[in-house]
Image 1 (cartoon, rainbow, N blue to C red):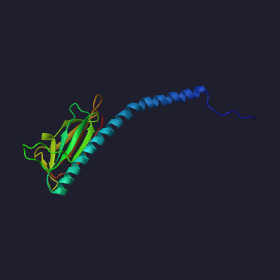
Image 2: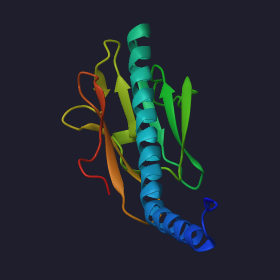
Image 3: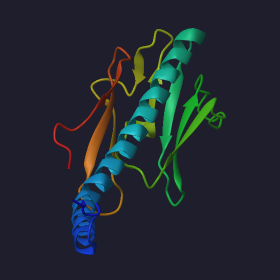
Image 4: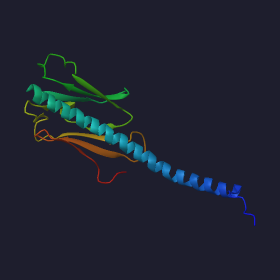
Length: 170
């Protein structure tokens, strides 16, 4: 008795390819949203780590350190600068000791603290903005169409920095 040759017919292969195409088409929007959320979370974590580094710098040197947020007007990147001791008023802002760039296509700033800065004292506590003004930086993403999500980077008076993500992602 002779066994038939194993293998698939052309029709069977076409059916499998069509099913794979339908699955890929259904999964693409989900994967795009997942990528946008990941970039938004990464940008928020970058801002959080910059704030924490400024706080540690203030404690180590026992003098104030500030983080300035400069939104990207027509540029391609937002600037997040760490500045050590504040100069007297007429003096221009000193060069940053640390500069982090965040792509403008990744996030948009919804709200920033007054003067676009958060300052820590030598004990690691938040000096500015003064209470009751919150030390929150709220970012939104994705930029350009579709559903948007907001993440808050909150700095308490004690200097604790936390990222607050939405309970339900869009």
